[in-house]
Length: 468
Image (tube, rainbow, N blue to C red; front, side, top):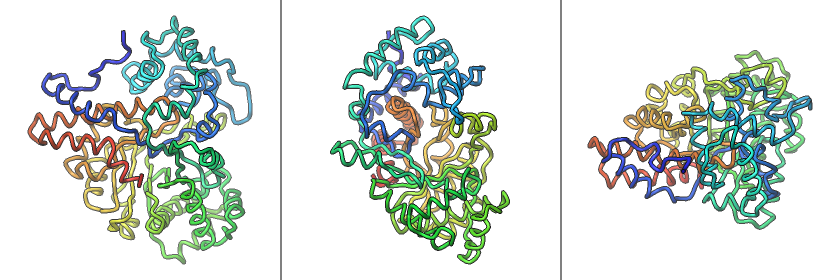
């Protein structure tokens, strides 16, 4: 018995299925490029064994626990830490049993595909996970985790990962990346500059963060010029630790192109903690344009992740903090919002700005036409809720006619769940090959071209977009 169908996600019609299978066979063994994600760099620095199955599959994965929470399972019952240090479930086997008892909730979701792929292809399990098999699963995975072949670096290599990017805040000391570099290990794990905590006036502790930013860089972050200099200093430090990109998770896609005098005046309001919500949004928008200018100078790819109402549940945010499954898609304007930045830098062929959205209704109407015109813009892959067979299919259908394949940035997995990386890339490769087979079958693409495009979508586009 197998947990996964070898022809999963391929077309049902036999001729197209055969072609999709051939396309997939040509790319399934290509190295994995994971240029944007949230794995913990400490895993690879320490190379200690993963503690237990619950801490590998359940506790760090908001895809997993948000589904369980939606069915009434408290986060505390799943071992998710509380910000106040309060009590949460600490027995990993108990957490695993709760997960197994509720595994049926994931039927039909991409999480089911990812998890079953990991269970079968990483750990060699072939029986379905249920309440009855929970302990057998736990014991089997626990036994594997005790082996050297299942330590983080060994899995990294067995997964065929060529490069993996983590994401660190502007105030991070990057000690884990430094430890990796000094260890002599050849695995390529690089950082990404994520300055939200010192760019977003509504980020908790923002004013203290600015002071810490100045102390860390030796720049006067009470002035606009010193504040910008601090960013340049930190970007250079991140580049020394392998960074090829910056990442910006803003609630809107708003950009501004203020004069430096007006930007300095806005910064003075922001640093005193006196900004209105509109002024805070304007400052975030100005900083996207400033970051784009810095990217022209230092070569970092600029990623914009907009369209998410982050930490939507105030009680969950207060008890458990950020990134606990309550970031919700919302309507996003791109055409008007990006115009100030695009007027400033959009025609620069040496700049790469990758756009990600959770409002997929904008793909055909706004994002594909923008990326199909401005040299600086690329479309990031379907993100988060749309990282799925259906999401990838809709993305290709909505964007290819307007911006083609070559104004997109390949695929990235954006995950905190390490073992899901090969599974997510497998889904993307299968989904793209299914779409390409359909184009060939309907006379819109030659078969030889489809094989070239499959390779580009799997490997080359991400490599080029992220400077890897």
